[in-house]
Image 1 (cartoon, rainbow, N blue to C red):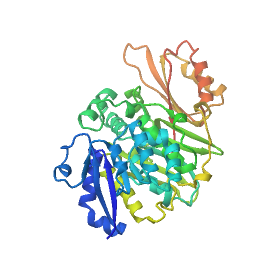
Image 2 (image 1 turned 135 degrees about the vertical axis):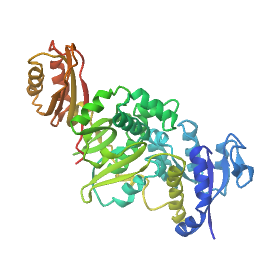
Image 3 (image 1 turned 180 degrees about the vertical axis):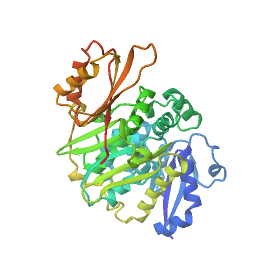
Image 4 (image 1 turned 90 degrees about the horizontal axis):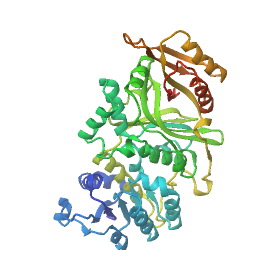
Amino acid sequence: MTVLKVGLAGLGTVGLGTWNVCKNNAEEIVRKAGKKVKIIAVAEAEKNKFTCLEKNEAIYFSDAMKLTDVSEIDVIVELIGGDTFARAFVIEALKKGKHVVTANKALLAKYGNEIFKTAEENNVTVGFEAAVAGGIPILKVLREGLTANRIDWIAGIINGTTNYILSEMEARGITFEKALKEAQDFGFAEADPTLDIEGYDSAHKLALLASMAFGTKLNLDKVLVDGITNLDLREVIYAKKLGYRIKSLGIARRRNSNLELRVHSTLIPESCLMANVNGAMNAVQVKGNAVGNTLYYGQGAGAEPTASAVVADLVDIARGDRKKMITSIPALSFQSDQVKDLNVLEHLSIESGFYLRFRVLDQAGVLADITRCLSNENISVDAFFQKNHLKDDIYTDVVLLTHKCTGKDIFNAIESIKSIKSVIEDPIVLRVESLE
């Protein structure tokens, strides 16, 4: 029986998970791939870190780059992380005619255009199912399952850390700071959670999803990114009062020949499925013009869910035609000569509903003044309420939901509202999406 020989770079959480899945599911993999998938070499700075090295079940290298010189290796799995050494390592592997499988979304979001071009020039492929939403096979859905569709939009909870934090804030009425601390204690958040809570991790993933859905070049630098660090518990409470829940979403939408690419806290109706995705789980909703609305749900991180996606890519490569050294399915769904450089809209041009909270003096006429400023920009109000103020408190919160309008309309209205003397603070502004 033929063997697909693999070099594994990085034996961290996902690397060890990949080793275990390949070993524990070896028989099932053979039945599906038609050949063995065997890790014959590993690269890891700490030689005695894992039992696979102690048992001499694979050749060991301390320098991952040396894997590219092993002629027997067909595929290199890059699980090192980062985008400096990893970039040089992946490019070198591709130039030496080796397929690459990676879970490194930051690497691909930043340098994917170069990496995929190098792969095509050297007649090899790059598998990266594990880079987005962990164990959810969303990239295969876009690349294969929905290939007959013209994708209209994608919206996803694609970061488990932020979803856990927002879920706990809503369920238990705790602050962002307390929810973050718990997420770190439970291992859902890193010691330095910046990439997650500031939205950059989701932006990396969204850039890849958008490229596959719309056949456009990777546009990481054009993604509108806003994290959850400044989200007050009041917004979570008030959203619920209005029949909404707040989720940090990555949204990519086609607007004629333009694209929306944005990551931010979003109010969505509590009746929709996405609103009920809680904890550290991920979910991605895709709207195709033929299939309609579809939803994909599962674990977005963790050793074995992510390793499952890594090994799935290895199986795809094992199934391919070894003589051609490349699968017939383009890595980014579209044929390379059909990839377009579409215009990405800036945030003031993007249309949606809006949630607005104003801190105001509790006196007659304030609401009328605010709605008048909105009306002057042709913005209509969908719902509103005024929070009852505490005894002896002269201030109160006025909360409104608007119908769809552009960011520019809202910005202009807010500039007028700031001039109202009874409005004492800059408003809180969040977007609202129906996901219909």
